[in-house]
Length: 286
Image (cartoon, rainbow, N blue to C red; front, top):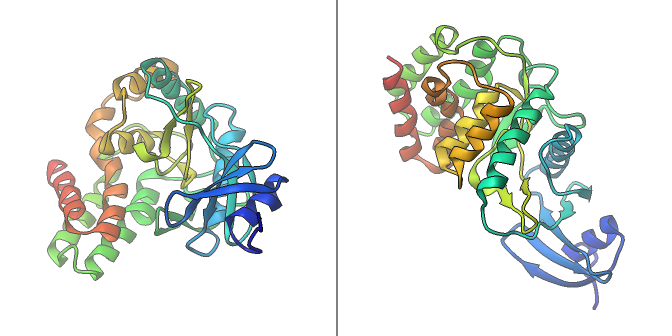
């Protein structure tokens, strides 16, 4: 098989150390490559400057906590990221409970500050296709408002997805975050984009997390995103988490506040329905 000089197969050969036997495109950016030695790797094409390096740094930072499992990173450059392929199976309640315990341990591994990027990560990173700035702070409500909520509310307003009065409602809610945020907590090591599509249920019974937007944040934010978009056996994930590291009283009442970030990101990327959900959170907090 002739390997194109700059395609997924060439990237797999360069970083995994074996010639490609065949390739299978899974999406516009993701290719499964079977190597001559029998291993199977995933090759992801970066769509934004620095995205592959940021993702690789995030995966390695999560792995360094020694808790959650992630695909091994073989290597990356400005265009390609090569990782192990995860053979997937059916969601399992026992695996979900382990995932909850492992998430608690990941969060407890900590971060230098709210907004801290992984070692080797980017200040100007991404969450999905949206820009995400990793600017640090030591006061979670202030940092969350300034670096995770208001930038996307303003971007949605500029695009016309939020009206001026609606954007003002989000801004007023941000002013109240210090009184609504609950007990202060140390910065947690977050996956940062923890929706169900980034949770892979392995055929071996273990769960792997992929596609992080890793940074230092509040641990309730990762859990709120799982609650926002759903996850198989979510009750078991939460039970395992609580067993390992109980959440502060009133955490369920704060879920909406933590969902503002992903909702407004989705409003910027996908439009009005997510803006309406963000406005509903603001209304509920009155």
